[in-house]
Amino acid sequence: MKTIISLFFALAATAFAIQTVDMCPNRCNTNRAMSQRECSVAVTRGVCSVDSCSPPAYNQTGFICRMPRNSFIIPNTNLPLLEFVVEYSWSSSQSDLDTSTRFLDANVGYSCSPDKNYVAFSGDDVSYGGKESITIDVLEAFEEYQLSGSTSVATFAGWHGNEDEGDATLKVFLRKKSDLALIPGAVLSSTINPGTQYGCAATAVGTVQIVRAQHHTRFTLVEA
Image (tube, rainbow, N blue to C red; front, side):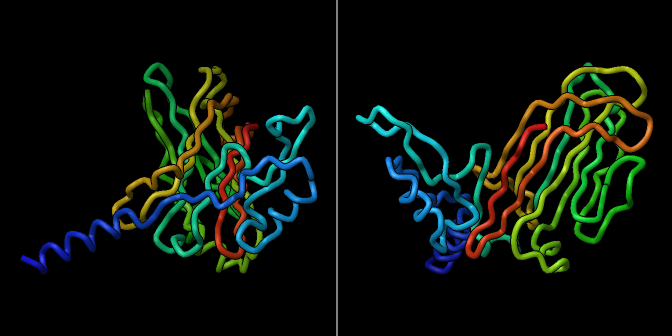
């Protein structure tokens, strides 16, 4: 009985071990230099940035060291267990959105470059209310290209043909390789405005900035 209970708690601990973090101080200072110092220590350098704020009880602009908007941060120790997904989806009244995702030297999608070892395309979806996605092994890519700082993922989308079918949705997230479970807090999304084309999609709809610092990696979705 004790063995079963111990196993249960061990599995529960494993299930909840991976989560996003926010180690940025998030203090609104009247002195910019103070916030710059807070953003330059080992644990915050690269993943936190100085922004403006409004200090309470002060009639002036302040400065804060915080995580950029539309971002999430994950400990580097968790990266071997995770994969990064870029997902494009559209409504049941729309069909055949073609997508292209550029990462390092790969531009993967319908009528684009072939898959790479660390980038996989879900395949062309021509259905109504469908979705297409790109899965990236971020750690493998960083190690293969010996990247030590930042990189980006560029996203493109367009309706197949010459008819504009309206907006679609771009979502990026981290999930576990083992069971594809989403990591709580590691999801970002935006409404996108695709173009039209017959070949590889060329209308930019957003960029994901990936910053790998000493202890953590930050993912930020920047709208086009």
